[in-house]
Length: 108
Image 1 (cartoon, rainbow, N blue to C red):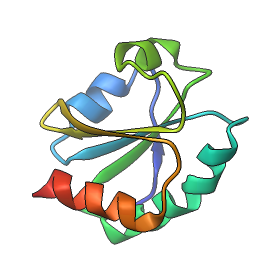
Image 2 (image 1 turned 120 degrees about the vertical axis):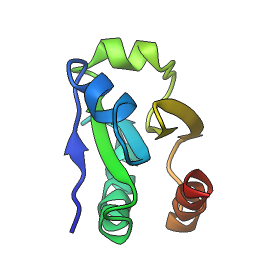
Image 3 (image 1 turned 90 degrees about the vertical axis):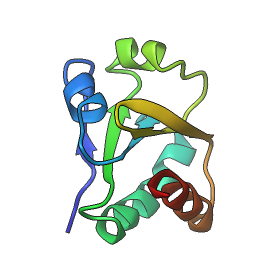
Image 4 (image 1 turned 45 degrees about the vertical axis):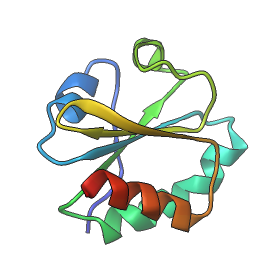
């Protein structure tokens, strides 16, 4: 079973842009209610999409370089990356089917 991994300013390039698998980047913060609400959904999806999609979390408060570099203005923000390129963004908390649709779109 796959798990959600933490990524920092120092590891973002290697873990996300250099990944062979498509990557979903969850930019979150400990004080963010909607971020906490979607965490269990992302944990479920990490298991359901194991070996096909990598899910990582970036703490917005501790990794300002990454937050600025990817243009985050509101959290939670999920960035969808394939072959080192951002191919989609989802801002805010959504029901699980919305995330599944974005995962499938990224894998298509």
